Image 1: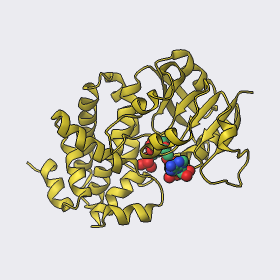
Image 2: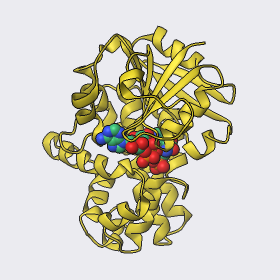
Image 3: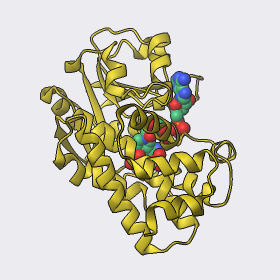
Length: 296
Ligand SMILES: NC(=O)C1=CN([C@@H]2O[C@H](COP(=O)(O)OP(=O)(O)OC[C@H]3O[C@@H](n4cnc5c(N)ncnc54)[C@H](O)[C@@H]3O)[C@@H](O)[C@H]2O)C=CC1
Ligand SMILES: O=C(CO)COP(=O)(O)O
């Protein structure tokens, strides 16, 4: 049996550890020791050949700098986000530590809460190394259908950007603007994230498939999404600090909105929804912001 180490025992790391244990021998670690099955130290887990890293995007670069030792491991990145302080994508951050041929990125519509119940799910493994994608794909259980793709940057941007659109969709729902507004917001969100990703050479099919439309439709239409719930909080007039405290889990859309705002300024890009989400996170009245992109 292949041994896999999962780093990060939050919602997603725990669900992936559960799923992968159908076919593999899975070990897990996190910052603080936990009383869970097959929990081992970081030092021990870094000796394994296959690793899944499920810690929040905003913490990746400091975590790698302080903890990671490259030892020819093969990595599957499960995080979805863009670094707020630098605007760097995760594949750029990891490039300093892991060669291209040893890294893959996970994408697709997948609430941890459903994976942990073995509900049917479809995921995409994205890597420049097709042999590596195939290897990771083969580790997933029967209730998860896996696809592979070489469009790393497209999948990464789709997974990060949909969280920002999910915040906007939560605001739309919280303000009771109706299904027409919600559908137009989500479809325009898809156009916006696709246009942004094209700047970086992403493929069109990534955006009409599971990684793009699939994950966007899931996250931007369900209260199960933490990012959607951030939007509901904004609609209630709460500050982002209050919302994050109440949530108690990561909502990557917040950091990613700040990253996109800076990238848009630097590269002079038109990202209207991300810009209004930024304004609302900074305290603009959501009625004003929403009417900026929904009204004529
Ligand atoms: N929960 C979900 O349904 C899904 C989550 N994701 C992505 O997976 C990533 C993790 O999300 P969740 O597990 O849901 O979040 P979570 O809030 O449940 O857990 C985050 C985990 O990261 C660890 N962590 C935080 N800062 C750290 C640091 N500096 N060093 C080491 N470990 C640290 C925490 O201890 C915790 O175990 C995010 O990027 C999220 O977007 C992707 C798909 C589905
Ligand atoms: O990425 C996810 C589902 O694919 C999880 O979304 P949230 O982080 O908004 O809960």
